[in-house]
Each structure stands twice: as structure tokens, then as C-alpha cells.
Image (tube, helix red, strand yellow):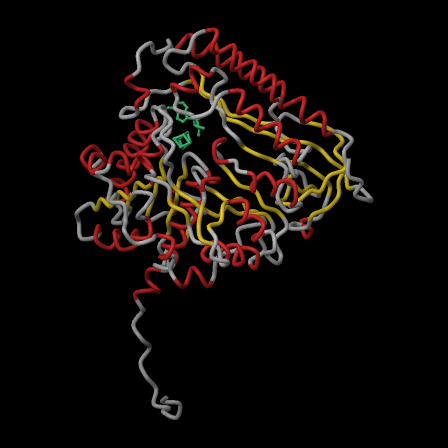
Length: 472
Ligand code: 5AD
Ligand code: SF4
């Protein structure tokens, strides 16, 4: 060490890292929660490369579109956004200011080189399996030629979270996503996921436990484990056995500081006994389950390659409710799958009546080129799809409203999450994933407090602080 040398030295030239520290990235996220998680991780990868994230597009030196390919028109939307960005890039160039444009996510994976052919303003195209290579891809793109990275990387992207970001995961509020599994081997005949996200890969227990602990240490109280087919997660546990998602939940429930666990999205075929037991035993595991069924007709379920019947799904719901009576069930539905008759659709309506959903997402079937569904005969007309969707959504909305109303008068645990719209109000999350407004101090954010539900709004509930927690 040169501690004793006191000769004045000239101020060092600005380090490249300092210059880079002024760069800003704006990330626009489309689609599912997995993309939300991936956007955060891309932000982390770029942070270690000197980028700050910004919420304002105009401030950004790099604009990243994290895209979704699940339904039609997604790619069209991306191309029209890219048209607007091309104009912005031109205007910037006239001012002598750089604007780099990146396309990430499932459209990037599906379209690859085609994107730079159709939108030459794009600098980087990066698939969901390679986003850890983003800083390097950007550096190479600065050489002038667009870079396309859509290989399935042999290395594990989860190992590539840069050390600096690892050490200083920013506090992201009191709830967070944690990806435990990616890809899907189910091959439902309408779905592009097995093609864009590839086959099922599970992260290791050690990786998941370490990330959960880091999140809890940074103030996160509720973690949602993510996977395209999350309940197919399997990995070797520290005891040498192969663990399923249920085992993982029992383990994570011990994480100091963590109060709540959730997981999404599940396939009915992968709801094993251990997972149902976890719902029975773990108070940390929230009583909410997103379990898509898509349709209620056995003929359509078969054509969709869902690998279960309507009766099997209903029986499963019964077993889950027996294990955790207060569980709220949520689902996804597709109307107008090729060949769907009025009678098939009536089966879907009957199944919805039989289950009683607390929350649901429903879509018109949208043809995805390259999936087996696209080649099936008897596509349903847009008018019929629209009319069926309207009927289904009316029923689902009624169930959702009935569920919200059934909460009025109950005292529940509320996780205070963020400031409300009115001063003196805080928005919290109920065990059933509802937004709840309550009078509280922002300093209480992160606390779980007992509140009494006193009313319902269109998308949220209203509550007052309760003295004591009386479980109803
Ligand atoms: N058309 C309509 N909806 C679809 N989904 C997936 N693929 C399609 C498609 N081709 C829906 C399913 C799935 C949800 C994420 O998106 O309901 O569960
Ligand atoms: Fe798509 Fe089916 Fe896999 Fe879900 S389970 S991601 S719908 S193929």
C-alpha cells in the first residue's frame, strides 16, 4: 500500500463506469408476470453495467420492449411500437444523442432475425433465455451492426445475475416475484409457450432459497413463485430426495422475515398430494390458487391436449377445498377453440357454475401459427367467439362480484403495500389477492394488520382497521 506517499496526483480521468452511470434504460413490459420478473432481472443486469432504470421514455438512452407472443396481434403491436421508436431515434440522432433500441421476450424469440429485417432501427434482439448476455450484446451492437441473441443458452442464465446486483438487490416494495421454473412440456394445442420458452427447466433449491432470503432481507414480505407450469417444478432437495413444489413451499415457509407465499401458474395435472397438503398445513401459503381449465367440454379439452376431463378438474377442486376451505380459485378460459359447438360452450358455462371462481381471465381463441390448433378444421367465427366471450365474462364477473361481497364484514389480515390515492390511505393485499383501501400510515407499509372489510368497489375493497383479529 502507498499510504505514505503524499505527492499530489492529477485527478484521474473519468472512469468508463462513471460515464456509463449516466445512461438510462426504459423497459416496457408486455404480457405475463414472468415478463415482469424478467424485466427486473434485465434491469439488474444493466445496472451492473452502469444503467439506471427510468420511468420516462424521453430520458432513456436505451429503450427495451419486453414482449409477449401469447395471442394474435402481439407481434403487430411490437412492430408498430418499433415504428414510433425509429422516428424517435432519428430525432435523437439529429440532436447528436444516442438512442438504442432492444427487443426482448417471446416475440424476440419467435421472430429473431426477422425483427432487424423489418425494423432496422433495432440494435439488439434478445430471447428470454439469454438476457444475461444483454450488456455484452449492447456493447457489440455499438459497433454498428444489430445483434440477435435467441439461442437457448447452454449456461444457466440464473447464474449470471451480476455480482454487484446480487449484493445490492434493490428493495422493490413488499411483494416480489421469484422465478423457480421456466418453459412448458405440456403442449396444449393452442399455446406457443412450449415453443417460445422451451422445455421445462427448474431452478435449484439453493438458488431459490438464496434469492428468497435476499428478497426477505431487503424488506419483501410476500413472494410469488413463478413458472409457466410452476407446479411441475422438481429438483433435488438437500436431503437427497427429489422435491416437488409442495416440498419447496414447506421449506420456504421457514424463511426469516417472509410472511406470505403464493405460486402461479399451475396445471391441473401437476397438482400433487404434497402441494395440496401444503395448502392444508401452511398458514404462510395464501389461500388463493390460479388453476386454469380453459374449457368445460371433454371433447374440447381433449382437442386442446389438456390431458384431463372436466370431472377430474372438479374432483381436484373439491380435494383442494377440503384441504383449505377458504381457498379462492381463479382460472383462465378460452372460448371458440376450433370445433367448439354451442353444446361444448354450455359445458364451459356449467363448469364455471360448478366451481364458482373468485377471479378469472377469459379470451377468444387466437390462432397461433405453428401450433397444432392452427391446423384444426372448423374454426369458429369471430362473431360467435365474441358472443360466447360476452356470456362467459358476464357469469365470471357476477361470481367475482359475489365473492367480493361475501368478504364484507370479515376481519382479515392485510399486507400494507403502497400509498393509496387519498392521503392517509394505504392500499393493501388481502389473502385472496384483492386490493384493499384502508386508513393507515405509510410508515406501516410492510406490516400485516387486521382490518374489517366494509365495502366493495369495482376493482377493490374498502376496510377499516380492526381491533382484534377474529378469523371468520
Ligand atoms: N388463444 C387464446 N388464449 C390463449 N391463451 C394461451 N394461448 C392462447 C391462444 N392461442 C390463454 C390461456 C392461458 C393464458 C395465459 O392465455 O387461457 O392460460
Ligand atoms: Fe401453454 Fe398449456 Fe404449457 Fe400452459 S400448460 S404454458 S397453456 S402449453
